[in-house]
Structures are given as C-alpha cells and as structure tokens.
Image 1 (cartoon, rainbow, N blue to C red):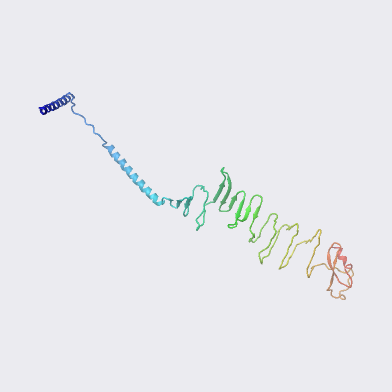
Image 2 (cartoon, rainbow, N blue to C red):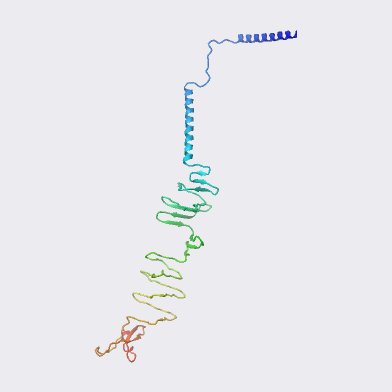
Length: 312
C-alpha cells in the first residue's frame, strides 16, 4: 500500500513539472527569422593577428641568435668578457686594450713575465688630483718631448731607494756616484758651478773652457791643480798673473826654465870679432819686476845692461 502511494506522488510531481515547462514555453514570444552573431576574429583581422604573431616569433628567434652570436664572439664567461677578467683583486686585461674615454684607476701593473706598454697616437698623459679634484701632478709623453709638471720630481734607485735625481723650483740635485757627460761639446753651464771634484775618464783629457769670457775658479781654502803623470800647461794670449796677497809664490822643481827672456846689452859693446861666444848669462830684475838676461862676467853685469829697464 505504501509503495503504490509513493509512485502516485512521484507521477503527480512529474506531471506538474511538465505542465509548468509547457506553460512557460507558450508564454515566450516567438521570433521569426532570428539573426545569428558569430563569436571570434575572422577575416582580415585574423590574418593581421597571425602576421603579427609570426613577426614577433621571427624577431624573437633573430634576437636569440644575435645574443648567442655576441656571447660567442665577445667570449662572455662567468669570470668576465673576452680579455677582461673580473677577479677578487680587481679587473685583469689580457692582450692589447683600447680606451676611448678617460680611465680612472687606483693602480695599474702588468704580469710578472711581461712589460706594461701605454700607447697612443698623439700622447699619453697621466694626471694626479687631490680630493677636491685639483690637478697636483701631470706627466705627458708626447711625440716631441716628455713633460712633467709637479712640485718636486724625483728619480730613485730600484734597490736602495737612493735619490738619483731631484728637481724643484729652488734646486736640482744629482745623487749618483758619478756624473758622466759623453757629448762632443761637453757640458755648458750658464752660471756658476760648485763641486768638490772634477776629473776626466782614464786616458782622457780634462778641458775647462770659456770660449768668449773668462774662467774663474775660486775656493776659500785653496785651489789645487795637479797632474800626477803628465804636464800642466797654462797658456794665455796676453798676460799671465800669479799673485799672492799675503803669502809667497813657491816654485819647486829640479829644473826651472824661463824661456824667451829679453837680452840685455852693454851700452858700449865691443866688436863682435873680438868677443867670444856667450854661453852663460846672469838673471837680472828691473825695479818693476821684469826679468832679463845679461851676459855673465867676472862680476855682475846687470848694472851695465840695465838700459833694457828704461823702455820696458
């Protein structure tokens, strides 16, 4: 009994739902000749879209190929690019490098087994600046000259750190053990020269010359000129003065010769036929200090030949 009752109730529900659906369909207005609107992109728009997608794909492929080519040509690696390597101590360059703009670095050095070469078509300029950007030093290597602009320029030895050459506004110091001038014209000094020792090379002559003016050697405690194994010559065109204001002039030699001294003559000389050949002379001195020779006799003959002092 219960089972049949449940079936009837379900049939009533289905009948009621079918009635409601049928009633709603009848109430909707019917549209004759309905218009259909397609959904999507069709026609020339679709073709343009496909063209742009294809162009984008080609561009991506070309960019990817160019990127791979650049990476291969420039030799990009994890450590750097080409000859450029990035290390913990800085940047390392291998081979020849060209810089088109100024280079600002703290230190530049080469490998232990190769030199460091800086090359430019015009010149190479190295500038040093202070914390305010002001130029404090400059070194320029050009085609015609090497110029250094700084307050003090020094050249030091590599091992002992000894100053070999130093120059500033006040003085120039040469600290080498020996200064050697190899030019054919020698060394030319425009002003005075102060030195404790001047000597020539072994087996070479030393010449001090002033072509158009005088040559003066001064020393408060004395000037010594010596030739240990040769001659000492002093030559002049006019007069040679040896003067000692407080001391004496000392000539010390086994033989002292005075050449080209004037010869005094007697006021009334005898005939040459009766006078024997004179081989010994007497050295006489005029009141003005002039020396002359007089023929030696049994006594002094200086007084009889002193007429040479009258016109000297």
